[in-house]
Length: 91
Image 1 (cartoon, rainbow, N blue to C red):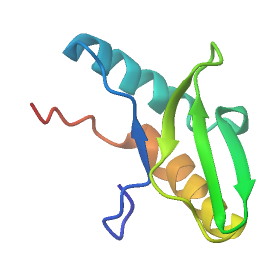
Image 2 (cartoon, rainbow, N blue to C red; image 1 turned 180 degrees about the horizontal axis):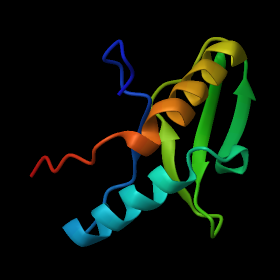
Image 3 (cartoon, rainbow, N blue to C red; image 1 turned 90 degrees about the horizontal axis):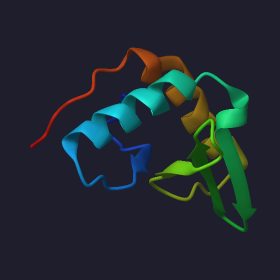
């Protein structure tokens, strides 16, 4: 969640709570690395995926950004805050 309250990215669903916690921790551990982000560019629809160490896509940007600059701003926010963000159990 960004400082403005907007969701930046969303993960795939998990079948178990344990899988979710492991997946969340794995995402947090990789957010600082540039290789984690796979970018796609379409007209007024700039998106990104978060890629695990094994190459599997584990999360998608929650929205398409009008500009590449907007997308890059979201990625910078993730790099800055995700590693220290709490994992919140919402069950």
